Amino acid sequence: MFMYFGKRNIPFLFGIGLAIILVIVVLYLIFHHGPAPKPTTPIAAYANNPTAQVAMLIDGPVNAPSLHNQVQVVINNYSTTINVFQGYNDKVVASKVYANDVASFHVFLRSLEYAGFELGRNDPHLSQASGYCPTGDRYIFSFDVNNTQKVRRWIDTCNGDPHTFYGNLNLTLTLFQNQVPDYNSLTSSLNI
Image (cartoon, rainbow, N blue to C red; front, side):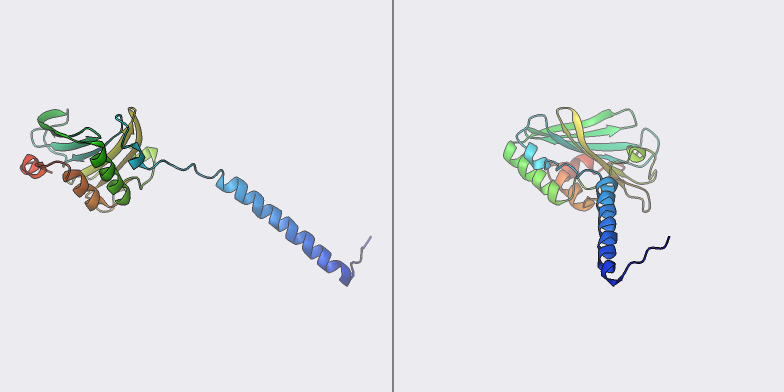
């Protein structure tokens, strides 16, 4: 049986078709993108928290244990600590602690925010920088609260390697190094 639709029915059919397309688009947007991401607390909001700390680890080129060095700077609202390691078993060859305070820590964390400290990706296949860029340096940045890692990002000096840190590397390094008054004298002889 053939049904005839006159010219009067064309706007009706067009409206039905448009409604169906609209429903499909809305369903696609709901199910394809999922729920909206939860807002994250900026790291500077943790400046008063005595368990909050940020850290930078510079891991030097892969070589003999006697030549391999790492530099770690850990900063919280009451201290800044620099550790210099030799080899691959975290043998501390130099360590120094400096006093810090909440106001200084807050400004430092705000500066890290502006440097893009938290920018990057969480990829379980790239959680460790070990083995990447064996002839260069690896930079690992972290932010912990209550012994829980909130941020962990890394990047290296080899072009083309994957990485998880997307912030401003030079500014981030400078900010950490400037928190240690004698950073240059403690690290000048290292192979990094």
